[in-house]
Length: 114
Image 1 (cartoon, rainbow, N blue to C red):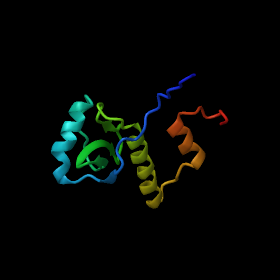
Image 2: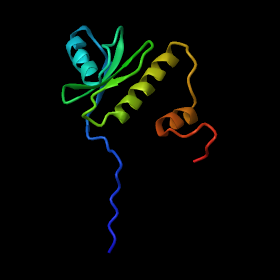
Image 3: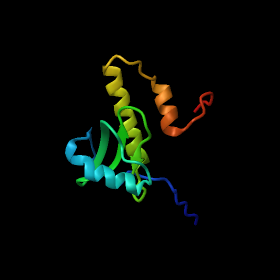
């Protein structure tokens, strides 16, 4: 008998809220930046929270996302990036196509075929 164990991450957080950051999030964002060994975010950001804890944040301007390194957050960051693109598209900025978004989520090379 053979047993195969897949080592694929799964989203452990069943209920996730994506929202704009507010003034009251400053302490949680500072904590998140410290955990991520990053500088605190400046300006407006999108945050992903679960169980009343901020797990990831993405600046709406420029800058890289920050996330809790002790939690599986890659999918949350991808969700924040997708939401940021939706917000930009509603502001009249060009949207990336579905293929571009899928390649970024699965890190497929631009010329590769699934």
